[in-house]
Image (cartoon, rainbow, N blue to C red):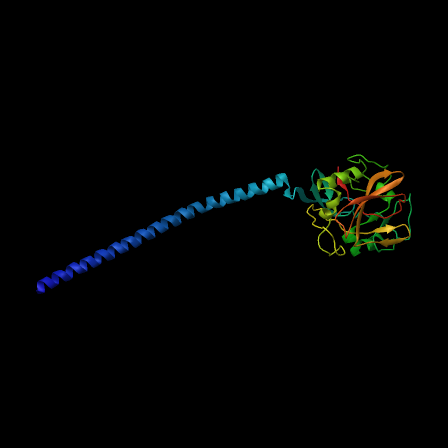
Length: 287
């Protein structure tokens, strides 16, 4: 009986160690497998990084190559341009086949108060400023936000009117840029869906600069139209916050043309006026 018990005990003990060894072997094998996987991952990780970096680089290159994205059929590219005449840097935007400044022109060779106007002499204004000091005018918030208001003579800078597309009129724009004609504005408007809705697609959103309701404003074009108002012939500034307005090179029946959009409308249109002494904003188009 004692011998039987001893034999049974030895068998149980051997079975226990076999299971323990098997379990230990299984654990070791698992550890080895895990280490193997870790080594594989470790060895593969740099390659993964290289592949990921390549994909990111390729994506970036493609974006840089095309330089655009599509939003509701509006092709937009945002880059910048520096006017070497005064160092002002401008955001610019590609809309369709045109490259526009995405800010109002700020070139200010001289400045005069609103009380002074002329149909023939070139004058530059900054909304709300009535002095003659260029540096003072440039220090104002209105200059920094809305740019400069030009009468027709200053805008055209001695050039004759044009209805061509492109206009061929550099005017007061920097070298490589020009004042747009009505035809160029209409090309932009048509690309954005027509006169009834294009104004909203051009306007900056919210009411930081636009007075409420800023109807239809989406700025999906990236144009960021701002309501800089204008200098009116009676010697005052008017309509800041309500009206964005820009000169064109077009003249019809002895009346000059501008293109504008209101705070309470999403459409955009032209106006013709026989007086060249209005002070109006400018958006230049790349040649």
